[in-house]
Length: 102
Figure 1 (cartoon, rainbow, N blue to C red):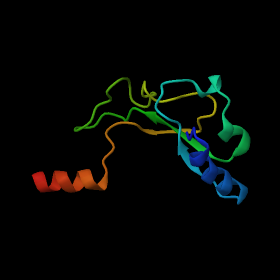
Figure 2 (cartoon, one colour):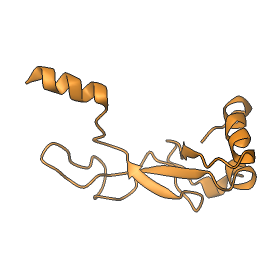
Figure 3 (cartoon, helix red, strand yellow):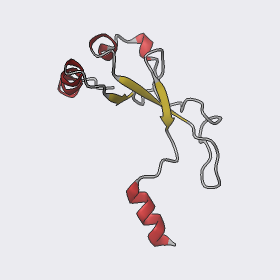
């Protein structure tokens, strides 16, 4: 979640224009309930995403917990709206590199 005003301002502008935004919950391993969340107060329609462990597959296993549990470094709390994979995420660049390797 954006902590500095220059990173938070675009979210406020989008919220004021009625645009729903999606932001990362961050990687501090801390409860967001322990902090005053400006996103919750000033941009309540913003979707906050935490990191979770993916289900095991042939080429990926959860690194620090059971499938669909919070990755230990992910922030957490009642302000989180949903969870996305926090490990074993393949980007386009990684896929191209893997294809070239085979």
